[in-house]
Amino acid sequence: MNSDFFTQLETELGGLTRNGMHLTDPAARGRRRMLTLLRRGAAVIMLAIALAASLDSEFPATARGYAPAAVAAMAPNS
Amino acid sequence: MMMLIRNRSRWSDAQLLAAIAACDDRAFSVFYRRHLATIVGWCVRRTRDADLAADLTAEVFAAVLVSAARYRPTHDSATGWLIGIARNVLGHSLRSGQVDARARARLGAAALVVEDDDIELVLELAASVDGAAGLLLAELPADEQAAIRARVVDERDYSEIASELGCSELVVRKRVSRGLSRMRAALATR
Image (tube, rainbow over all chains, first blue to last red; front, side):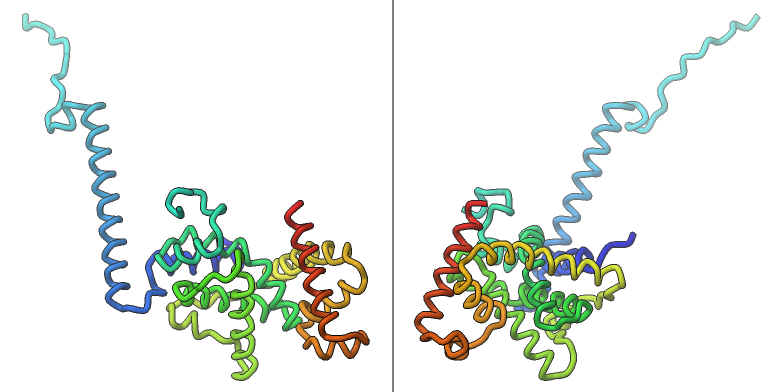
């Protein structure tokens, strides 16, 4: 994707702000990075839980690990 | 207060800078968009070179990020503080013979390339700020216009302006102050 110089600059400096690269204390920068990772991890876990919940409500049998009993008309042996 | 108003575009510069210091990237975006044209315009006027102006602007905003925690508000707007940073960046660049990149190096920012299309954008941004200020300036009496152009745009000393205009320094100061007040009032009503 092509964007102009000033949009790229905004994105770049915004990212550095979020990651706390302007913090002078290396420990604070490390804590900031750890916090970002924790937030991302929590977001991934929440997303997985939401997906699992929706799967369970839409396809309860499949989600619990067994296939729904096939309702098949079996022709009686003659 | 800051947390109560969720819309960052309504925050003052001081609130935005405090949030930037606390790693709020959305506050950075609002501050950047609020002041970009002013800084680009200032750099273009000083350098007469769009390519150089873009590069200097990048360094100015990187320096804003580095210095945000040290900002102490003296006015509602941080424009004066920002222009001070721009002046330092330009001064260092002129002394060293290359565009200052200390703040970007300190942050580990990637080097951005100014493309041909960006030159047009730089000039558009500079014209937008010059245009707005120019319109307000044109509405002032001629003596106030001359004093503001000499002092604010060309950054000349009061004594020099006074001798050129054939009046005292005090008169020049009054004209600048009165003209700027009028411009501020006109801007507030638009």
